Image 1 (cartoon, rainbow, N blue to C red):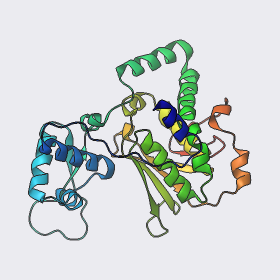
Image 2 (cartoon, rainbow, N blue to C red):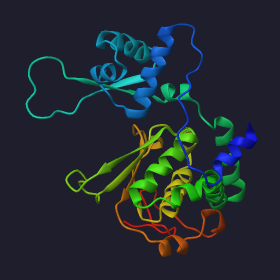
Image 3 (cartoon, helix red, strand yellow):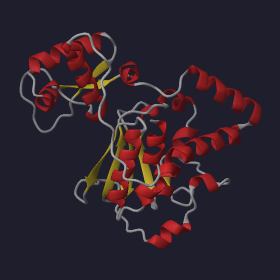
Image 4 (cartoon, rainbow, N blue to C red):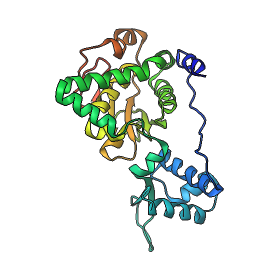
Length: 278
């Protein structure tokens, strides 16, 4: 089994894994887990939106959402106002709390935080940064060929999203055209709806910095980090501009594992050569 998994990581096409739900005693438990996963991958969502996607009644969805909120696994926020609103209560959107995300697993716990604290204290911040870069290299390098052989930033971002989903990040992409790009250039947005290391990254942002740098290097273009779960956002969102990058550009950037002196000082923006932009 392990041999097959290892072979699947080397150069072949990368497909997101099938969703596997934990064993549940009742159908209600399975439905609640499906609702929680939908909030994880696409939240914040209204009860009506969840009901439409799952094909069940809004009343049933609200009952499950009330349980998730009561268990501190979900929270609500008011939907943004668009135009004039009539009478009645404002629409509510639901999203998972950190406790709710925990039902989908975390790769690190308090032991990892303690280990990084020890590393920072006894070896300094450069050692923490080197660890973060080494971790990302180990995660993305097995999939390098599957991502870099794609033509165009949007296709590469989609391949990277499949890689991240396989590694537990529940990632997806969406295209942003000139009309909807706002302050960023048209391109693709890579969204990670779950972060297995969010608890650790909240204290050690070097993990996010190394991730941004690795994305830029792997995609062969400047990327801009717009939001992170570690900062309290609903998802980690990275903007990938639709800039053509030729094979010469990709050959110019060595794999992250080979670059010992790469420097990233800004988690919000990184270029393929390890630098940053405003």
